[in-house]
Length: 220
Ligand SMILES: Nc1ncnc2c1ncn2[C@@H]1O[C@H](COP(=O)(O)OP(=O)(O)OP(=O)(O)O)[C@@H](O)[C@H]1O
Ligand SMILES: [Mg+2]
Image (tube, rainbow, N blue to C red; front, side, top):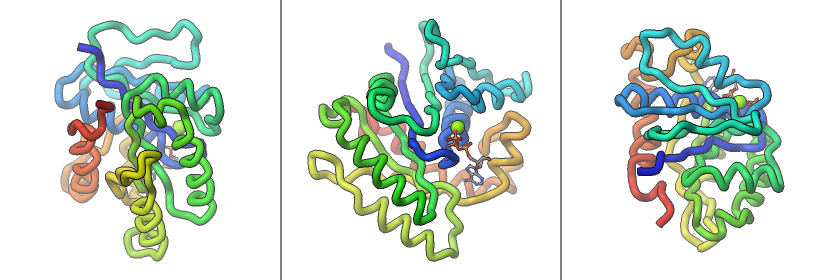
């Protein structure tokens, strides 16, 4: 069985790519799956996170995707990829060709929504997406639930269409919380901190995991 490949991508810096990639990787590692986390960013934030990860936690294999010779060993169940900011053009096509599923985190601010709009246009125009070789979904990240920005981003992400006219899956809304920051500082995920603190966030993650585990996130 080929590994399940998932890339987290958005050209906009700070939208939560590394946070989502690390948390998705941890989720599957906790389930007992063999997981590799490929960091395509020269800043190596995902690899840094893994270096802080306590040894007694479910193992995630770090892979430096910026190295030309980087390869993922055989036998992995999941290969989660963290894309760098400012991925456009050929680099974007190249990154999209490495995964069968792409998650696009978007944060609520007018500037970010405008940037997201341009990026999504580019993604929708990518050969792999047009040929249905990669399934994409959006996730709203760092949402303040009682702010007007919440409705703006939800309405926007909900309105997006795929090249074939179907709705682009908008699969989860994650809130803005220090829980991610505190967990990341210790090399942990939201799934590994006190459940009493993270209970609500775990609930918000459920539809994203459900989508990733469904056939809807895999090309036919
Ligand atoms: N839901 C959230 N709530 C609070 N803070 C968050 C959340 N998601 C991400 N952050 C924080 O926001 C900052 C940017 O997130 P992250 O590094 O994941 O974005 P990125 O898209 O990988 O950025 P870059 O483009 O620079 O690689 C980090 O400090 C991270 O801890
Ligand atoms: Mg990053």
